Image 1: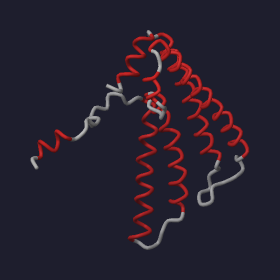
Image 2: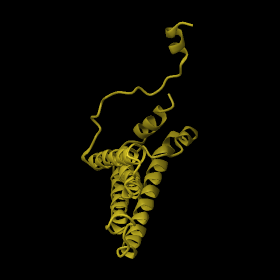
Image 3: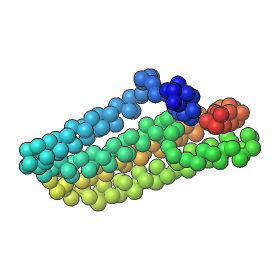
Image 4: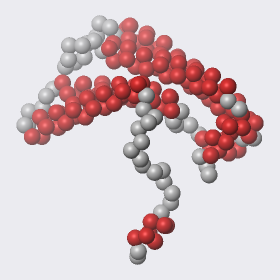
Length: 181
């Protein structure tokens, strides 16, 4: 079969580009955490399988960096509005109802992240005397970073609410429905 014919039969997928114009200053910490995590896992792999003498601290620190990557990376998702949600429900709503539903969803998101932030403060306070098993650092450092990430996500969600309220309902509906062709 001809390659061009095979490619014509493939479904349309998102085009991958090297455009990084949507990177904000808020994305730099997650990039740094990701690079550090790659280095930690590479060091762990090298010492365990090449040197046959694993560094004991790399597994625990990698686990904590993965948690940080999740929460700090979620800031980018909230900023871009790309968190998982059931987008196809917009297809079943009248166009005039899409804006109130989108604002309500952002409000619920902001409330949820704010609530997580308050719970994170309580957890960080309770664990300030506990230390990591292999590194002499308090576990509360991780929890304070998660808490700060949750509060920043809540703040960004509130900014998104204000942006949605200022925009015309038809423009919001067109953007939400544009994803479905």
